Image (tube, rainbow, N blue to C red; front, side, top):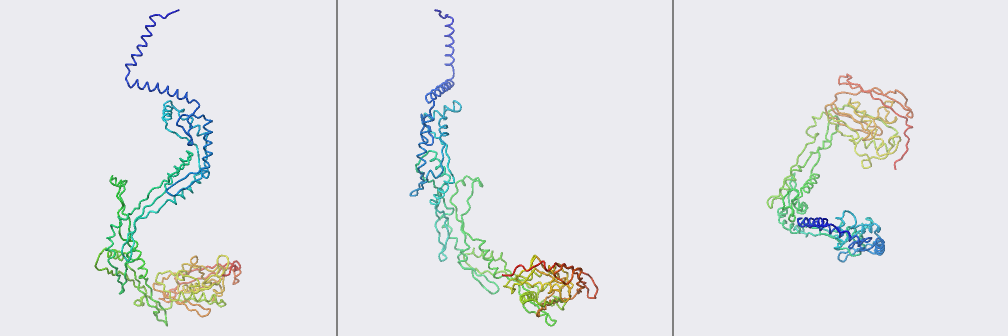
Length: 597
């Protein structure tokens, strides 16, 4: 036998002694850390050895404990539990209210293989420190549940909404009412609401646990903004508002604003609280209950004044005039315009409501405006003589057409045109329907003829056009008919002196440049219509034509005519010549395609 030499043994003992000496000299904390590392390695190794191929303690999936189970047995347990759970119901309860939701009705699906994989990998993945932490949790019984499931939000939503409707109660601020002008405070009321988000989370928890344990419905309270005590505390401020009625005086008349109206102006609200984010004051983190704010609704008072103005205001209206036997006469008195000062009235009413006693009489400020043409200024109008006449003759017109011509001519009888004003036939004509005396008759519309209210009114506009031409007035807008019509030919034998109207698309316009007012008068005798213009004669219009450029009086063929209007001064000198071209299409292009119903 070979024995080791003493030198070798001495060296070995010396090495061990040196290591032991170094360990003993090491700081206590370092030795502790070393022991932890060594112990951790030993624990992880032994734990993994004992549970090789098995799920660690404290681990569950879909609410089923899988401690010590293999993958295969774990999957079998889960599938069995899920089959049973799928036929059950999830119950949500609140007092006597219970909502039962069939699990099968939520389209719930489970991935058992994934859940088993998650459960098995717990404590086996990641660094050794992470595995150690998870294994210690498992040993200490810190339950961990894994679930891989899904469900239909669309299927759950109707149940949640139904429960919310059942459990919600209204929240209402304290309100102010009046009984025989005496204030009454209706108490505030707290409300409840279902926490939809929290309930959805709780349902999800039950599904992940395959648990049919009832879920207490998560509800929360809603507090009113304006409380009963806060509103009651300010009702004494109503004394000034209800001290008595308000009397409005105007133009020798008085009207009263009664208590009921004043009460309708009173408004109640919560005084705004300070927000910490704005004030940065720690006291505003928990603001006190809102205080009541009692006052008048200025918009409501202003609305009352606006309605009052609608009753009192009136626009000025000129005197109605007529030329009789060469003398200008008043046939209708003028009307002075009246306008209520609404801002002053609103301010006065609000001011009077602030007084607890004393005079509540308010004299309204009314601004008056005299009509431009009135009984005192007739001589300044310059209406002293006839300055022109326009005439048309339209034999063969049916009775319905004559009715419309007569109604239209009446509308222009007595019209005053101020100096510089532009006459608009359509604007002055107004509404054309049964209520204004018109009946259906043929009009040219687009590419055809059809019956509409007012057919034949172009006879009136054409007559006015001829009077404006004869007065030498500037024609600023005129459109001829689409095809030549015999009603507008007399006395020239050639068409071209017509002016159609279909307002607002088509209009007749001319301007009064005489420097004086022009008074229009219309006269209709049978099938003859005249427009007489009265004012101060400064010029005359003389017509030359119309003549054919192309075509003939056969209206079934297109044609082109032209006429000239020479404007003469009072000495007979031509100061201006206007050219009017008229282009007509064939009457065959405009068939009667629709009759009035």
